[in-house]
Image 1 (cartoon, rainbow, N blue to C red):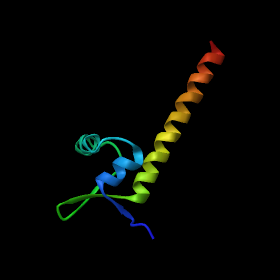
Image 2: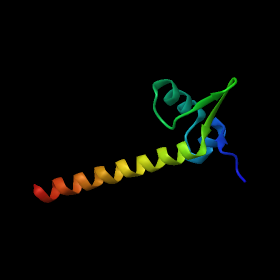
Image 3: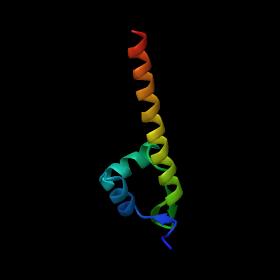
Image 4: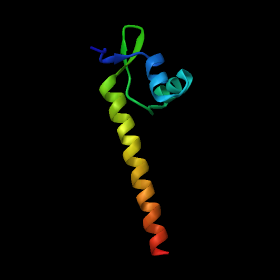
Length: 73
């Protein structure tokens, strides 16, 4: 059974962005939600999956808006 907690390295590999980008996002309050366990940053697997799904939904909405704007022009 996979762990429900992911390290920054695991998340970086999963979403194909550098760990430094995750760090910047974390400090800006962007990206998937993270938690601190002691001195270690961890991500709940379900939070990462939810964040990825929200990106997909947002991109889908933008594409639909773009298509609607083209049709009305």
